[in-house]
Image (cartoon, rainbow, N blue to C red; front, side):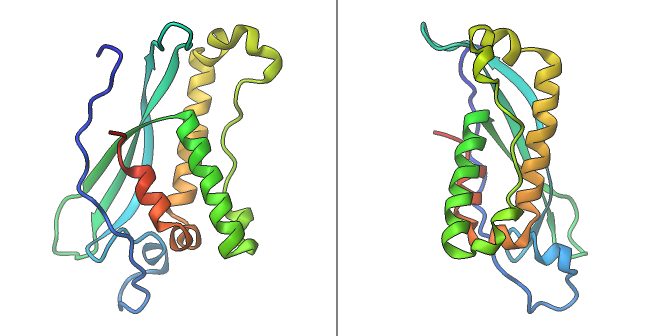
Length: 173
């Protein structure tokens, strides 16, 4: 892979509230993707280091996979949505979630998890050395995965910000 990541757009999903449907557990209700699927889990994997342009330092791109399962017990298999995101995309997503939740349901702000910390400003002189360290990246991956799962599986957050969740899961063009 050179400097660019090419991905296919996933099929669009619609998040719906299906609390009136009998036989669906509360945990599944809170993570419904649409009337046929629910989001079971998300994974953050495959860190790819991309060389920036002349003045831009190298950066990491993470593969985010959301696993969708059918609600119908007679259906088999699962579907996966794959997208690639930088840490800054997670920061923008979290900030957008915070803005939305503050205006729609301020009491739920505490439900939005923290992200793993960025490189501290006083280490900026050795940014690439720290930001591309394998141990640092492994810890960041764990933190990003925890964040995205806590968001996608939280019915309150998804209910308030369905459009933001869908937008985040779509690959960049």
